[in-house]
Length: 107
Image (cartoon, rainbow, N blue to C red):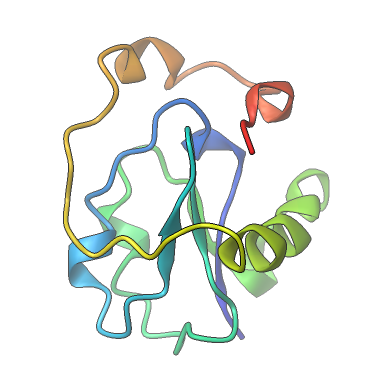
């Protein structure tokens, strides 16, 4: 099993999760983070660190978020690893409660 970054991360991109990851499985895109499922060791340390609850265990991903399993695997191969916490985008708080954000995902 792996952990998955889901839709709430889009345009929020808090990076609290990356510093606790013991295997550096997070990758950073323009406005979202993703987890490399090949590197994730299912330690669960990242899940409670996410302030918008965007990180879920693979088995807990709701049906309407299942596309993020594939997106995490695909985009982790394209984007660089991130291991240090960065400042959140200036407008992150404004995006926290927004739903249906997939259209805003930047590749």
